[in-house]
Structure formats: structure tokens, C-alpha cells
Length: 546
Image (cartoon, rainbow, N blue to C red; front, top):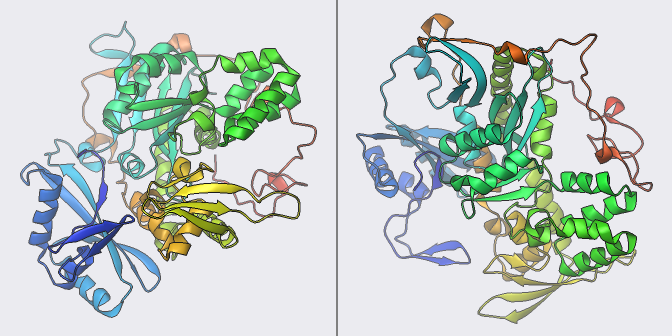
């Protein structure tokens, strides 16, 4: 069990425990974590069980345990410390629908040598200095940083990261590298940053090597990126980023952009996207015929790219439905004000923005009254409503294989047939195994069997996970007088200073990605409705000060 990330556990006490359809079926002597609290098991006994489950020594590691529970329609979280379980007895005794889960965070016992180390000990900061630096004066080249709470939150997220680089717009030439993912509510979660001189093979290998060593040492990940040669080289040559520890996938938007550079045809743009995003073999074959009819050289160009790296159909369910690097690119857009600042101010701004992010989503998560966060709950209800019109037929009782026929629509769509393997969590539509989130066909089978539809939803999408992701707090930085004495000073590489006449460019340069299909209307980027933009959208919110 990895000791560098938190995890959710449910302890079962005695009795015979059996699993049926992924749900624990126990006899009368089986007790769950909430039952342990009901029986007033002492905290020390509860702690010993957790240490035994994790397999670590009390003398070397500390377990920070929190109880996530729902009571009277509200989600709550409370730390499990000595005698704190007494506060839960009333809840268990008065609420028949009480449900709880324990989150365990493993912390190595260390003795801090300085106040600055004690403030945010899980935060990672690594330097790489220029070769002509001296022992007393270091010339800046690279810096990597990742905040401890963000690292812990990421380990409760889906195992997908998006990486990208953006230009610094201040007086110092360089690039800001960002790695980000999405939380249980589909919000962007920044994980780590780096400032480098250029996007090169060396800088990307250095960034990804530090990410693997200090953020996700043993976790299997899917990495989404553009087709930059430095990223491709790092993913192919670094042992810790080779399959099956990691899977490299290309941003479909960038693949389409590269195609448009060679063959400028708006119809090719639309077909390329459809080909990369479909999960059905028959549609993929149809798009191949269409692209060949337009330009055979374009199809030959796409054939040279490994299908698993850009086609969702051949992805083998590693990218979990993420098609583009919009996660990291959105972070770059949100940090465009930071990219105009000096390097130290840029780092300070990322810290303050991350603190604001955690404070904001912590409040949203604690006020969530649904089993799933708002975004995923809305998707769940949409698919569940659609599932009620499907027609089912059971084909294999022991394997629980079903045929699901969708309702025909007035516009000629629908009426499709899909096969659901309920025990293996697979559907021929591809969405269930691809997203780890049940499709409407799976929900139709689940309701037909009389099971709880929420039982087939992966834990990474639950409200309890959402609460725990933002339960990790920050500590204000101490006064500079209490910082560690590094015994060396740092200076800028003056060869990287850039002086331009006039005002620096702040807006993004448009390229072939911005070419629209003639039939594609302009839509608002906030509400996705045609006829207006985000500047005059009624759903717009005031932005943070840049």
C-alpha cells in the first residue's frame, strides 16, 4: 500500500462477509465502521485496527483519520481523535440512514528543524541551477513546486493528468509548466508547477521526473499532452513513465490542429474530431471512408500516429473520456496575470490562488446535500431519466448479460441496441468502462435488478470524496526571518532578460485551431448557448483580480 497518499477504508468486524454485485452482504454479527462507533469501540482499538490494515509501525508513522458521514441530508466530516467518537453516538442512534466512511492519511513522524519546515511540510520545492553556478551564488535555471494539500487531493482524483507549457510575459524569458487534473465535481485541480528556460527534452524530463518522484511515485497514470518532442521523448525514455506505469495520450485538439496545418479543409477538421471522439467501431469505419473521399494524404498522415494515442475507441480506457488538454490550458489562462509577474511573485500568486481554490470548494462540498457533487449528480439524473425509457432483455443469467434497446426519437435517432455485462461493468456504448461512471444502459439494468443505482458509481465521483479532497488545509507562510538559511544566494540568468519596445502582447495568437466550420455557430464559453459571448452572458461572475 502506497504510504504517500490518503485513502478511504471501511472496517468490518467479525461475521461472515460476502460480496454480491460489489455490495457487501454480511450476517447479523458483521459490523461496519459506523457499527463500531455504535458499539462504542474505544479509539485505541479503532486505531490499532487501522494500523494493522495499513501495515505500518506506530513509532514511525502517524495516522490522521477523519470520519465522513451524512446526517439529516447533509454531508459532514469530523476528525477521529481520542474520545471524538462519542460525538457520533447520538447521530447513529437517531438516524436510520446514517452512513460513514473513514479517510486515513499516513504521515511520517519527523522532527522539524525550523519554523518554515513546520508550516507546510508536505510542499515540494526543487531547484536546478545553471552549470556555471558557484557554491555560494547559484544562477537560476529551473524550479519545481507542488503544494502538499494539492498533492493529497490529487491522490483521491481520477488517475489522469494534463500537462502543458505557457510563455512567461514579464522581463524574464521562460516557460511556466503546469500539471493539473479534475476533482470529484469535475473542477480543475492544479497539482504542480515549474518554471524553466525553454520547453526542451531536458526540461520536460526534469519536470516529469520530479512529478513522478515526489507527487505520484507508484500510481498508474494517463498523461494528456500535445505532441511536443520533449514530452514524447520523456514518456518514451524515462523508465518511470513507460507502460504499464503510465500511458501517454495526445490532445485531440492538437492532433486536429496539426492536420489542419498540412491540409486546410474545414470538413477534415470536423471529421478528424468525430473520428477521435467516437467509441463505436461502425462510426469509426464510416469516418475513415469520409476522410479518404476528401483527401487520401490526410488519412495517411493520421495513420502514422498510433491510434491508441488519439482515438478514444482504441484508448483501452486509460484517458477516462478526457479528449483534450483543456484542463492545463485553462490553468494557463487563469494564471495569465501571474505569468506577467517576476518569478517570486508568480510563485506567491499560485500559492494564494490554490488557497482560495481550496477554501471555495471546501465550502461547496460541505453544503452538498446529494450523494454525488452537483456536476456529477446532474449527469447522473440525466442518464437515470433516460434509462427509464430503455427496453431490457436478459440473455445470460449467471453472467448477468443484458440487451438494452433505446427508445426511437422523432428525428430518427435512437432505437440502438447495446449489450451490458453487469458484473464486469461493461457496455458496448463504451461510456461505462471509459468514464468509470454508469451510462444510461447500465442504470437501466441496475434498476431492473432492484439494486441501488449509486452502488455502481465509482468512489472518485462521490460527495464524500469531494469533501475529503478539500479537507487538507494550508498554513500561512512564516515571516521571512524564520526561513531556513540556505547558505547560498541565487541570481537571475541575465541572458534570459528580454527588453521589448512598446506594450507586451497579452492576448493569445490565433491559429488554425480557431478556424470554425461554416455550420458551427459561435457559442458563449460560459453557458454554451449561441447568440452572445461571455462578456454579456447573464451567468458571468466577477473575476479574481489579476
